[in-house]
Image (spheres, rainbow, N blue to C red):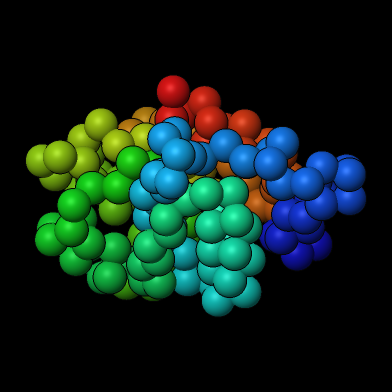
Length: 150
């Protein structure tokens, strides 16, 4: 089953988008989000959907790119990361992120196909604030993001 199943489930709900919009805290301001994901189809769908929800999305497509962002970029307000990234995996990245000044308190949601209990426990123990397995539902992802941003 493709991981994007459910992404557009709210579009059939009759809502205009205003009802499900959650990211803009101040009028005109977008919440910064770093997406660490290597699968291009997932990147395209998440990028489109999250921007539509009011996020300013930056993408790191592999572990090396993510490491560089952790070292050199200003921290975002939230991170969504895959576990299975080329070069450096999400478990290693979460450790680096939690050790970097300014990044320690950034909420991290691991979004990954690794859905075994040991992987979930490992991610949470490594410092992730939440863990969601692919495939996932739009409303659930948005609820988890909303909770992490409070």
